[in-house]
Image 1 (cartoon, one colour):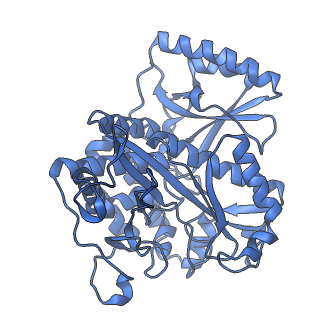
Image 2 (cartoon, one colour):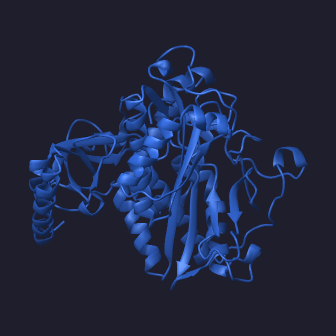
Image 3 (cartoon, rainbow, N blue to C red):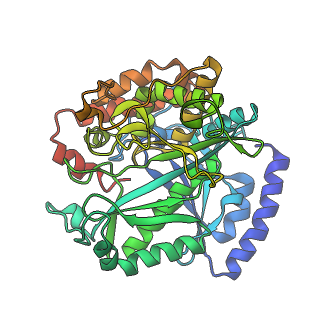
Length: 454
């Protein structure tokens, strides 16, 4: 970030700070997401916002090799106590936190102390890949679903979970039980200008889901962080804990963080109006074929935790098979045609991703894989109908162990080139350490150790 850019940011921040102070906002939470999928934060007084926009705020790069239990490892480029970075808030995303009175929030980009971009900044990686698509005239619109399980405060720390409601899956009874809580979630998100498409009870006990309108890839990643922390804050005010781990209890349907995406060119949705499968254009088909081809390696980013392996079970709506299908919720890649008169309704959904993912890594890597598919002129295989686990139609299973996922990731020249060595190797170091950490640990203990961390 050069000096004139920082001066402009400081001038804008002074105006923002004055408005925040007038609204009784005293602190600003500045967040980024590490390679273990945890949202980390540095907070500043509102009065320091202009100074922070000009000079940044310090943070060690070591958090890029932190694990979910706050232990750390070493990679070739990152690790140890040395070094410092500067965190610069994105003032365009500055948001008053409705469920945390007196606080605002902004995501950050990370730079070296000399102003050069930090090579392992996940948010900047997502932006680079978005710009790479834009250079080809492709606009990507993305959105994450947020799923979570609600339990009584402190219950996640005990042996037996006390779910906050008892109604059935998708049942109105469950919504009635927690209508005040869900109302407050919607009210807080509306106050933050988050456009919620739907909110509903999900399959597992105490589970809910929120879907929001699509954004550009970086905006979608920012938004899922904001939505999750808003849900967390509202939950705490109601005496509840929101659990975002891939699984809360082994054997059940876990929490997903499904990614929806569509491709646009000059205002036209490339997911429809073509001669390809289900009306896809050639570019859309090639993009999705590139994503499908790279899915085993992408799991290291989109379903990265040892707990993720417990979620990716056949016949659990998790997308455990490397295949695609029209409206098939058991395929890893589900295609949605949408209503004929819904101009933005056609999209694809990646179902195998979960909340342990760093969303910036996900949107960036999916974009890189899709663009590679376009470059190679890939075509999709035949779509799969029904549950591959029971129809007898053999489909490749996605990797079932952390070691297998890591091997697929480390073997991906595409992802190494897109991420760059410092970020790629830091991710690999974290995955390797967490795989070793949970090797031989019982599924119930893996779930208990991770369900409340994300």
